[in-house]
Image (cartoon, rainbow, N blue to C red):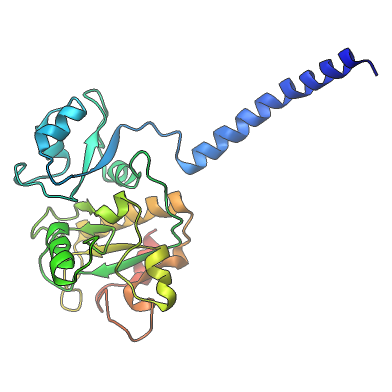
Length: 258
């Protein structure tokens, strides 16, 4: 067969395959969430950062960041705090709990996503608290150099608004957790830790906390293909090790809500 004919056939086959390859890529990126336009991104506060400096990087106002992150005192951001920041002055901000859950589960640009397999739910076993108070305790009290052992914290209205989801630095950096001991540390390596503020041995999670938890877990399940059976309580990791997340928290009920 002449070389010219072979070349024509080869080029014809390549051109015929292009639409198929394009379709495969579209389906793949849609499934992995990579076609979603980045209107916001997570920013980990550096030791010398101020809210004004962060705002200038994205050509937005400090007030916009403060409002989006429910900052009670914008002058008191702290190192390793994770902020959700609009990517520009025209960026569309999350308008619902579902949209916020989608935004905060995106990892920052340049950070490689970890292969998560479980979602582990905790309670703080204290009536009040926040990501910052837990981060400080885990740094100084526990001596954990990465601080906050959980990836997300959901407030109960004591230190942060009821149902407000805070993002921990371990999530933004895609680091293993420090929330669920298990053989070979498997659960910390593959489990996303979510802590609800409150002591559910004595009280129950608020309605707003449960709404936020369901929205967050659904998004994480979708993004990391985590089945409902792998959404567990801390007490399910090692039998008899702990009562967390408390007798008044039902994992079975949560799974039915997903």
